Length: 242
Image 1 (spheres, one colour):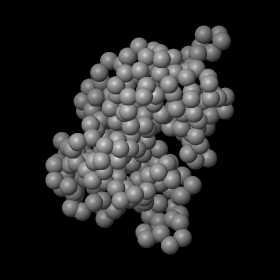
Image 2 (spheres, helix red, strand yellow):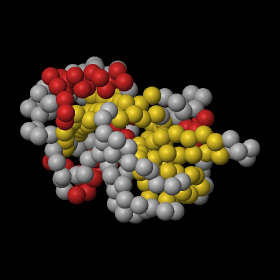
Image 3 (spheres, one colour):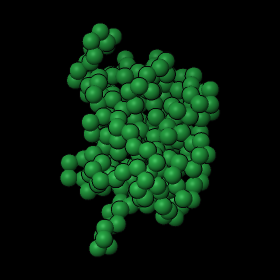
């Protein structure tokens, strides 16, 4: 997954460090969460991401950027949720080869624009795997007792595609299914619309949008139509690179 931010600047990331895999959890058929214990941990913010680098015996290296799904907690560990992409050399290795106890290389945190510090109103909109950095924000809000500051809207194709399915639901979150909804779901399957956003938007809220380029553009247009100034909308787009 390649991440790009709209606006702002990237502070320099920390040095490459060892990251031991302490836990692996399956989120969906194609996504796993990897919990990593950093050898040189430091502070990070909800919304930031880390680079993961693999080095082959012949010296060949490949690296990818992954959003942090865990809330900052000072534990020295981070969680990265990785979607396995067809022919993805890094994501395939992580899914098919890496086991608990293995060591990886990581570098970060990266990103100074798409961040939430946990103390201001925010409207979060995620498409598919774009929910990952938003989940860090939701976890932070819930842990700090600030859940009332957030509204999270997640769009996925079907129930089997929903990340964090047992943890995400709650009064702060709304799930939109675009292809197939569960039985008796209050909203029929269909694309995200303006009516799915909180109304009215909280005054002075910041909008955080993460997803594919097409999804991000559509969600940004909805926020502006709902009255959110462009300057308060922060967008992170991703594209598949593996």
